[in-house]
Image 1 (cartoon, rainbow, N blue to C red):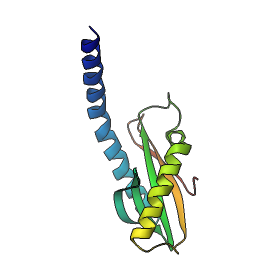
Image 2 (image 1 turned 90 degrees about the vertical axis):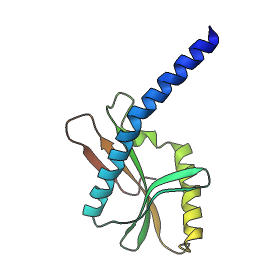
Image 3 (image 1 turned 135 degrees about the vertical axis):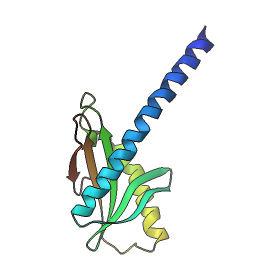
Length: 133
């Protein structure tokens, strides 16, 4: 009986994951468009290093910006930006350091932004939180 319960949980988890992935990609695309409207120039997408992923890396003028995009269907679990906890921030900092080192941007001014995407209505609502942490 325990094995069957584990399999059922795994199947449910995979089904939920399939539903969530397109929403996340949709949110990232919308965030990218939003950032471009504000003058950001996207230089990398889904950069992976040091056990973390940075959704978008962009230039805002002379500042290198590491962007975390959080998309939510509802606010029952809180606002999207609340999901970027201390642990996630620490991972992003490590990945940002790796990016800066790899592309020799150590001397460039850097910051971390969050783009919160609310997908609860018919249209996506997007909020840019500059210098979020």
